[in-house]
Length: 166
Image (tube, rainbow, N blue to C red; front, top):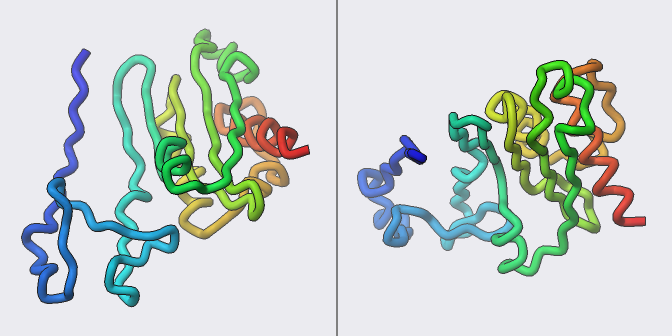
């Protein structure tokens, strides 16, 4: 297996020291849950970029991971949709895959989206847009998705996660 990520940071070229900031050894800035850096009026939001790994099956993610949320003691819930539950996956002849939503247990704000399976790198952008605008997992519960589509996995995952809260 070959795994190559093509994005390279350029923080070393930004003269961050002039703004009172410093990067870690990998060129990243430390931020809090509001994306504030160590200088409170300066924000950094680079981790909203989606990652796409073009393998078979495709793998894609945007936002936070369970590991990050756990280490930061963020109370979160997980909603999962298995591709085997989607009519479109069966029509495509490949029901191996899943979509996972991570959201705040109290506010229901979407915190992360992870997908593995056919077209994962395409459907990830739906979650990216909702996260960018500060949306909640309720958006997916209340939205009507075309049927049959892989995007319908968002509704299935949202209902799975919300049902766990009850």
